[in-house]
Image 1 (cartoon, rainbow, N blue to C red):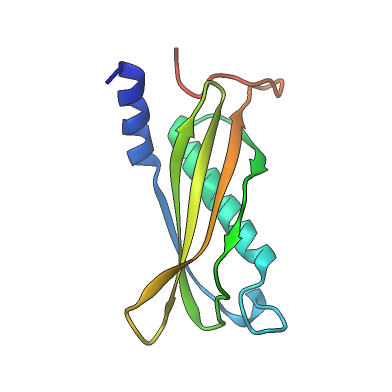
Image 2 (cartoon, one colour):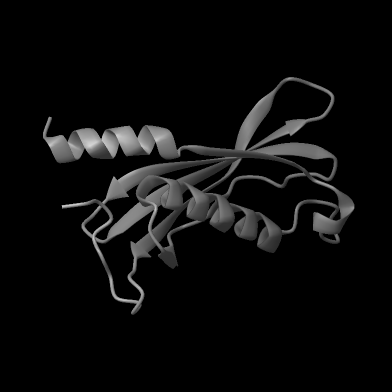
Length: 134
């Protein structure tokens, strides 16, 4: 394993982000399930935190790849969002976010949403910079 690969592995482990939230009425839609826009905002925030922890540089979101909503998340649920760096380029990185749902009354949980977010590190002039020191 090269020193760069070792550094990517080290930073990836340190940057994993977990956020737990409760789904209350202000975050639900007319079906009494988590509003998709709220879920996407939560996922973008977790992916941003994960990416920032990885490189500690200013970042911008450049894309979100396919977001799969496997099933609805009912009001009164607990959700856990988990962000992990899955790919590192020169000036960019990709973060996978998984959203797990569980009932407040039982231990079972399952993955409800999955997506990938891409970021580019930028300097004060908004130009791309390397995500790892050279």
